View 1 (cartoon, rainbow, N blue to C red):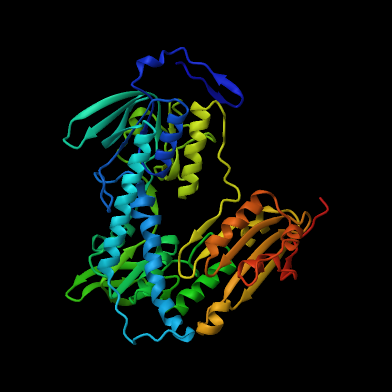
View 2 (tube, rainbow, N blue to C red):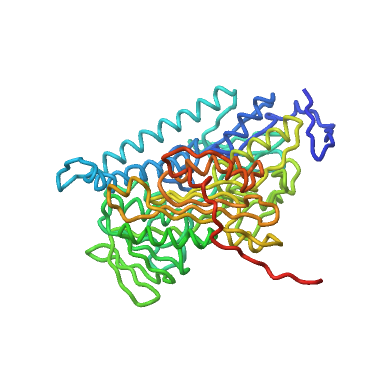
Length: 493
């Protein structure tokens, strides 16, 4: 059956007989975005094939697994470890709630690691069944593009098979990068951090992003000594500065040693572990050094340059607003395009790809008001514009509403850790432009706030909403007083 694709309201007619192709769509990469695109395309009637490297918790050029980074060595196992790390402080807090606990409480890292591995194996199986149930043909092996409509799959036994496809979708994600520091081979990335044989007694973390602060929180929550090094004054560059300062205070309050404006210059193997040197001349010995300095698009072995697919300077696949490359038959979604590198965004892009190419409905992904969370302890979650972004993007004045308070739970436990909530409002339109929260359950609360911002809610509508009492979330609808007004200079031009 000939299919037609709708782009910008116009049907793209093809004179080619689709019977000449083995598949209507072949997807390289069975992570969250690739699996979503494959399944939804199949639901529209497309014949779909997909390939993925064999499963292993630690990725490499020859290992991967259905489910991709998020499921196998990213969001899911990381969140499991965050849950595990949260119990330590919770047990401390429980004493003032009447729980009589022994002074020494043991933590079994190997047991948690085993349970984590069981769960990702289970999820790997679920993703395979999702593909099978959608009649998507799964090939285990490494795929690369050898022509505008041809994919070569190297199978586990080394044999190579070429498949033709009307459309090819690149969904190979990204991989952790290692900075060029002498001795960097002694360090680990987030992949290995999720599968360490032993819990480190002393960990050094280099980086100021999501992964760095999350693993610092995890290891500290489990009782490790943690030193966190980052180049800026505050961690989490790109987030609201006020929230970044709160995160830094909370990390220090939990016992993490922060080293702002500092980087590592060398790592040396010693009998006691790894000796790291900093650009300030400091030396620290640690069991583990985690390099969390970013990720790079996973395009190196896809043969894209030979086929003519354009890449940017980081190696990311260049695409248009419909996720199409400069080669009309080749598309790309997810982290490999380096647009907004979040699993739910890859799912959105995969969904819209399927609707555009096989559903006859052109959909452009909308990257505004996408919520996200940093699962440090306690977590940070945001949606919309930060104060700094609003000042830069909005022509008129900005109203800032901030509430800082001691959560009810802490009034009994005695933990000295404030929750902070923030709303950024356009003074002229009363529209809520951004929301931020750092505190327990922030991501669960922010998901609901994201719906309000997506619908264009005003501050008046927030104020007219009845809160749930007693809860932290009700604070978002009871912030009546303006904390500050940011006035932008006016001109007569």
